[in-house]
Length: 577
Image (cartoon, one colour):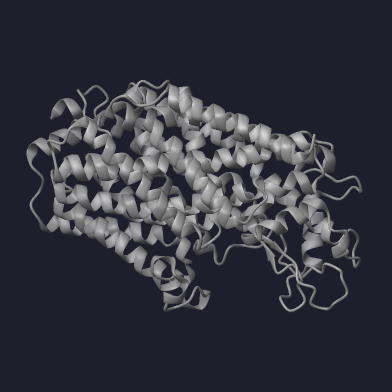
């Protein structure tokens, strides 16, 4: 059986399963649409959260990012930030928000700060962060579908948009939750099985995490060999290169960490379990399920980079002839994500850090995981499984984000502020219209993404970190925080972050409008735009607390409500209203 036919069968079967689950578990009420009826088991919710979390950025882009852009050690910011954020979420936010008992993050902010204006600001912040995140997912969807369908990136992205829309609109949170459990199973097998094969091939160790520190057949360590190969081609040493300064790496990690704890599509998951205790448990289970992939990613990155380099330069000084390039190379050339230009006319593929002599003019970071099994010449069924996993990862998070955006528009803005008496059916229809519009907007921006998938997602985390996270933390742990402080904090935090990002990345990520350029000499204290969310969060906290001190304290019933949320045996926020 050909690889293409086998891939169609495997992917077709998984898609039929997802759509079947979405139809079986479709939402019949707004509670089922927004929070799956509130009765999901903590382990099932942990698995669904894992799938929601392990997006195109984690599955498709992170290993490529560690392997290429952030060069090994520099990529550790993603591993630390994205896992550490879950600890913060489990300890400081999830239980209290679940106890409050509302559907969405803006609903909590609107009630806690007793203000529709605060709710509207929260909706705007949520939409800006979530749409930026969806753009990153769309890049991953375009990469995965273009390879699967053996077509251009643009055609792949269009096909992916249609699939996302169908099953996100069908099922709501209830359908998405059960679909994401199936997607987690697919994507974790798709990620770990090739890693086990490659680790066995290179080191004889079946555990990739241990294989990364093991020796190759010639007795040299994997990372020593990789350092030798990349430095010979003029690249920085893999194991010691940092991402800018130590301060930049610290701030980047912090931005991803608090962004994780402030992302609405993750927080909304903790409203789907029956109790506060279950919210803590499901956060713990989510961390376990996520750690399986995150501890495997560094090994995948290093081994895939080594295999790729060895393909272009089988022995030191001898280069692969372009006419003898392997089939995987030809497959990825069709997508436009891999490009070769014979600069010296010798017909050989010379790949180096020197732009003038480098003939691999495009090696997109985001192809590394999907191309990895083909480069390593693994069995066809493994390659087909990886294609299914990549598609599952991209689709699962896109659906969760679309739900967070549509619920913010229909539930928080329309029902909460503009039309309080709207019927349940009209609210659901409005949510689906909002979803359709968001798919089109994100798809349009996905045709010209501001960065590779994980880089775009890092921007989204920065926006969530600078706006939503401080408002939630102060709302739970600082009784004196009032409406004026919360609004001023959110606006100043996201404002300063957007201003800095747009200076370097362009207004709405249109590069021609960037007036400082994405160049490190122009960075504030050496902090890159993708990491600036942590600085925005500091500004948010400072402004919010200063304004709160200068204005009237919140009403007594709101202060009592904050005490009740934090009390282990209180009646719960919903009961207090």
